[in-house]
Image (cartoon, rainbow over all chains, first blue to last red; front, side, top):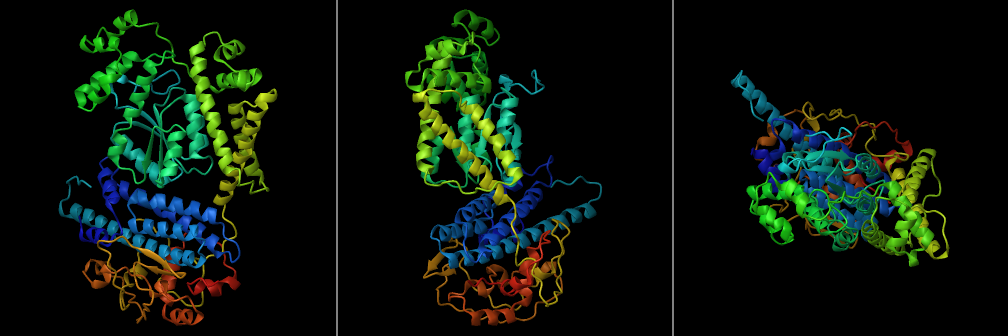
Length: 147
Length: 489
């Protein structure tokens, strides 16, 4: 496991579910992890948009919908092991249950921030991986490389 | 896989549990992909589905085409529990529920509605490896049931295979076998089928309660009157020659349970009235089709007084289904979008990053993030982040509410340095939350101004990063507020 990954584990950004994903990657689906993560990005950004839209309303908030979107985001985040994002969703959900508007807003900010951080780090991770694979191919041309 | 009549595969008991035909229903595409992969690794045959209604159609289309259904509890078009009921009633398949929410009351509901298991997300592969037990257990119980059953030799073959494979199988073999079949265990496998036919009672075909059959059943029940109903009467009315009294009796039992559960649910949810009176045309048609399906299933037909009560209950569920469909369909549609993501002010952004693609993205802004900011130390290693809500101030991660972080910003280094991240800088270890997010104080306007001056690039980054294919123009009146990156009410 490379240094960045162990760092992310240490920080609590990722948990062992991410390792599960890596273990699922094999010959038949060599890009499994990045494919799943890409879907995750797409879905979570959708949910984040939804959340922000609700919160943008200066008058009434639909707390039920907030809860639904949060649940969806939580579910997705748990799928790739995005532990910190998931935890913030849980805190956000508590704020929703308490009908605490300012806490909700802050939670959204933190959530977006955490998400950005996660996304950056995962991109880095994939780049490192890609470079490694390319490097191997250059060093050992003609050898079939395992992912 | 051996192909059945419709071109769909039929089960091959000799390789059980491999080849188990699983239907996965989840609205989250990430989980669909992961579960599909996990189940394939277990050598199961997987079909995925993103909508509950689609799943029901699939199940009805391919009668006997699946062995087990795994479904998420929160689906946009139909409550997961309702799906569970339908599957149990119509197809009599084992259903496993999944959710990220593990609250006891929900789990109990799941079990009440007939789920054979309730998995918590994130789901591990080892949990999926065991799902064949539910299929097996159901088959065993059907053997005991005088109403069914084909497939007894199936079970024996499964059992023999699983005995060879693992010790766990003994747990299942133990008490569940009738004396007749235990004898079979010892004899050779080859002659099983023939012997069995001689020894056992008449082998009956498994009754699949199709929609039509169920409709006839419900019509009969309603005609007789729910209170006075009895299997014999229903059977006579239904006029289905191959159906036995036992078939009807067990189905009646299930149906009764189903109705009582519906009534309980109605009582619980009766406080939430109809929410969305307006229907867009698309929504309306989809709702109607859902209504029609539901009506078919409940077979709300002609009726006398005692059954009116039931019909009312059934009727009252239908509008709820509509509402749920409608409400969820409406949530999916984006409303007028005003977001900060598209907010672009006069500040020129040197870090124009375009759409993210997994491998090719050049990410100038991100890498320059760490430079020059005064970081906040977080003890992340051992404790999960604790978020406390104190007096309305959201302090993240156990920071004292009074901590005021004064950023000392330098203009971020525009040079792209991918290797930057690999250095063990202290900045990496920190959760690089921009200070304005963690102000223990309430958000006053002074704070905002202060931060706004200091963080033009930071905000831009935040918004750029979240700028997906977003073309909604933001109202200029909204710009000002959003651009400051904070919400002030």
